[in-house]
Length: 358
Ligand SMILES: *Cc1c(COP(=O)(O)O)cnc(C)c1O
Image (spheres, rainbow, N blue to C red):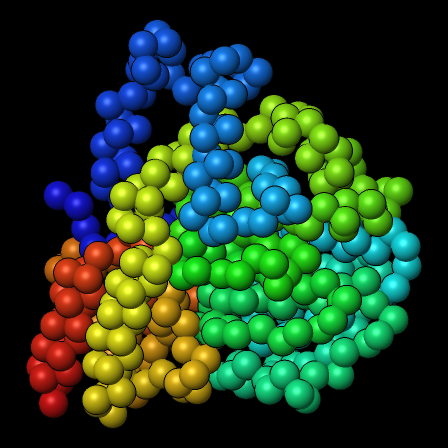
């Protein structure tokens, strides 16, 4: 039996995708091989990666002047790969710190160049600071933000217009959960294991004019220009992870695309936030306009009940609800593959647990 899986990542995948991958495991489309056994340069895998890129381009509406790259190294790898690709002509990197991930990113970028903090809510990650208060350095190559803070549960619903200054968005934990206007960014990146597929592949969407400003020290395998010129095959790409991502893209198209999945994600997250807000037993302190639809951290007002809450959840097959170790409490991640019935089962349990402790 499949559990209700609220993992923050690696996270739940659509059951249809897992079933298809299982049925194709030994023999992909009559090739006599598993996808993980075939040459990345062969006809079969070439069709897999080309279809995946075309489907992603269609789903997100990626403009023609953007490259879609498949890399390795995850979101954390990009924390170094982004500055190495963008700071080669000097200039600072602006950062907006709204949670644990953007803070980690600015810390890593310091190893490669000058970092300027344009805005920060460090100390109390509960909101997106108003755009008109950002102190953006003009002498900068780009501005980095994390469009969905996975640990703190903070999501950008809008983005400022910074003129010629490119915005780099770490969208690891909400990419494909809603439509995103890629043309407002210089770079959008994300690891796959949250909302796209399995761990091992990182998607980088980069505007072509930004491919020419890398630092000389950037490893060739992470040099976007080199990766782009080789159609993500400068080195052996994570073939199976790309295949799974491709199946998820097809699944998303069959669900009606990103506007349809966004409506479901709104319904799921509203159900959970309403349950939290309707009781003083559960707490979420994020400002309502900045609350993430994908990652919902919450606390029990009486934290001595945490272990009992988790044990009761586990007994009902509600899994991976423990909050990140840096913040404690609980966290329910509601990625695309998490169905509304899972959220309903969670809120039913939350109400029942509260009654049992009254
Ligand atoms: C998970 C996550 C990362 C890190 O991804 P890795 O694959 O572990 O490197 C980076 N940024 C955000 C927003 C994330 O959610």
